[in-house]
Image 1 (tube, rainbow, N blue to C red):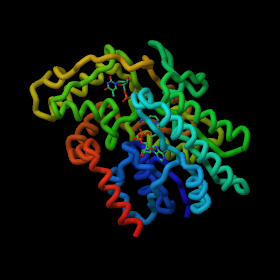
Image 2 (image 1 turned 90 degrees about the vertical axis):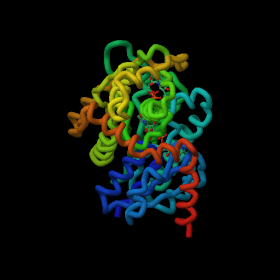
Image 3 (image 1 turned 135 degrees about the vertical axis):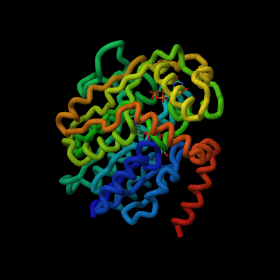
Image 4 (image 1 turned 90 degrees about the horizontal axis):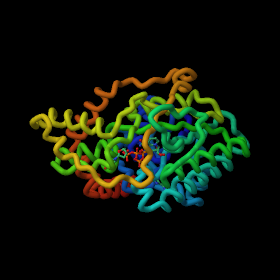
Length: 352
Ligand code: NAD
Ligand code: TYD
């Protein structure tokens, strides 16, 4: 049986990756290592938590001894590293957490993998999940390719850029079998309602203002989270050691246009009069260092690994809105701190 470590598996993207791997690969033991910060929630994994090929370990990747012991004990065959502090606004108010988790945490994992795999590197893989934000900001035209020079602007993107460099350095210096992918903005179920789409869905439902930063002119490329998970599956199994793959939805939206589209879907789903949700739009002070535009050229992964997004955006957004409206309890739990209790109950039960 292959043992795969997935870090950050209780978060938004991680939970989709864990679910995909547990269901698709019964011959793997999928070990989810997560600190369960505010963004980590075991409720995201209720449907797989009792599967015999799934195991949860609570722990902090910043804790060097803990990481070394887990690697020694579990003898992983592969690592998919998603654990991170992931929200740009939080990185502006508290950069240190990003330095600890995203940089120090990543190096702890690299060191532990290097130590445990030193006599047998064959068939091992350390897969680091990163973001398009490391490339900085584009003007009105152009795309990020795998060759674009790094130019991060927020403490979040700078910490991710730093971790990407370290992952590559461990490949070049120590021969660690690594692979990296850099993806654009994900959307879908189980995303913590601090990020644009779930926050605005939550606010529209509760008739609260929709705080649009600046003039809403920033552009993001949006990819359905399950399509990112399928790309991760491909890169993990077929990606070439030492390579980088850009992943994107080929789906650029100016924030204000996206928000108006969302408002239209919400009016329809909530049975409100057309235009009711748009009235909640409130322009607020811009985010400091706000990158104007991200856009990904994903031709490499499409050509070399045969990946492409499966869903068109209209369908993905409809599905996403429907999920948040149907899963009110999930939203209430994550916004009230209730999920911490859920974890404690689950964890105590699991320890026995
Ligand atoms: P998230 O914030 O939803 O989840 C992060 C997870 O990591 C949480 O479960 C959290 O508990 C865990 N974690 C945080 N600090 C930890 C620590 N010190 N030790 C162990 N676990 C810890 O993030 P996400 O949006 O799912 O992003 C996952 C990864 O994908 C990140 O590396 C992020 O940089 C990258 N990424 C995200 C996006 C996006 O649009 N969300 C796009 C591209 C890349
Ligand atoms: P976000 O979901 O935080 O992702 P990222 O900053 O990683 O791209 O934000 C997406 C875009 O939406 C970004 O341009 C900032 C903007 N935004 C708002 O206008 N208002 C908000 O309340 C939030 C959270 C984001």
